[in-house]
Image (tube, rainbow, N blue to C red; front, side, top):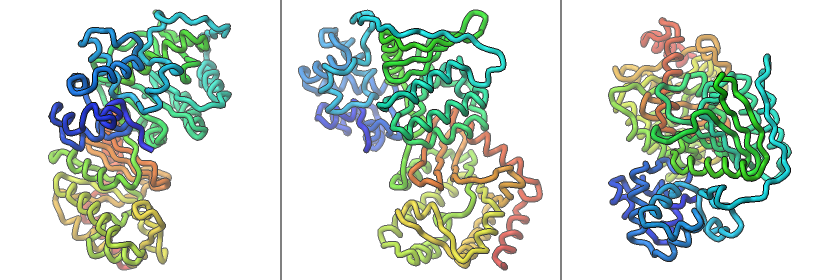
Length: 496
């Protein structure tokens, strides 16, 4: 179920309308609609959130707003109007619902200053870990995830990393250990939030690839902090709810000293700080399922730049990459309704329109196509996901599709490569479909689990994926990058 932001809650309760918000911030109505949800494809900027906060105070009931402000920050209803607006502005992105508002007496305020409400310190040790030689995974990290394993009631886990452990480019053994622990935690009902700052260069291609399982998981959200966000100069942390914090401090000698904190006041302080930072971020991996496919391709079409190349990487062709006549034939054979056929053809038209806007490079696994031709029929995961049931393509229909490819490869703005993923690209398997354009967008669909997909406009993420795709293209042997070689291979497949 989708979760509302505070902005979404305010629209639901009539403090402001989506139309007023769109007009005030000069954005499309559809964009303002997405602001209502924590997993929306768009998030407002700091200037937009300030405009929205001012509009809410202008149109909303002041007494009811004071109640909400007290929940956000006790005592804020007595602040000057400008300060009230600032409090609301910072909170508009956070998750909010009726239960949030009614839990003011039992929940902790996310902007609470721990110096205002003194709490009795619990008798919990604060353990300090010094770096050890030849330690593949620091003992402090193992200790933190041990606490997570022992926690029986799921809560939110936060990774606020500004480079102390360099979560974006940390040593592979440390990253893989943390990634495995995160996947294990979300299977038990935990949610993970990873905060990283904007950088002045793209993420490395290998980095974004190993982060792919985290990007795709709907319970793991990456956030990118805006460049003007003030960050601590010498510390990063992981926190388990409001109870445990793994704090990493960088000493003047540049040796990291790690502290596992289970003292309530300090743990609460870092939790509150994280919540304030999240309110100033934007999510970069927008999760989606197959019901969003039309929306994703519509967004992709509007985001691509005509002067840059879009890369498509897929193991095998899908039913979405067929002529309209052949696609209808395949869908009819799978008992698709007229409405389902219309939806699939709309997606195909959107995909084709992207190829007409800019240069496109399509990479399929030539070995996989040959395997499919040797079967009577095979399951098409893309179309199965859209229909919500298994859908199949016969080898004869695949040959018709390859004939369609022959006509497509004659276009000057379209390139198709058919390398061996295993021999040429060193990809043992490819269970995902990737579409990426540098500085524009990244869309990844997990073909092994059609509910796991994500879309991103984040420059670092998109740049990392596009760099990787360029590297893959260069790994293809020169002879296989020839249009003549591709056409000869297609004709050979058709004649089988």
